[in-house]
Length: 81
Image (cartoon, rainbow, N blue to C red; front, side, top):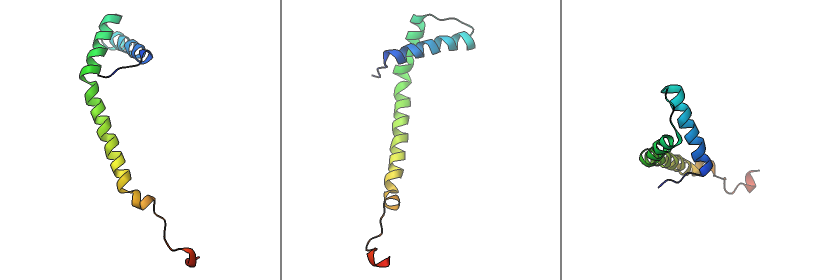
């Protein structure tokens, strides 16, 4: 289960309420906003989390594959100077 920091949760609740006021022409209270946030975190959160993990894995895999090219030092270079 994803647990949000209290300050993050409060910011998100305010954002949800503002969204409803500006885009849905409807005011929603704290309880409805909290219920919608809880639903989104539980239902949508894991999908977004998994996508982020896949993106991070792909990025790290690319970096590891290129490790030989970016972290290479020529050997036996003393006499070539």
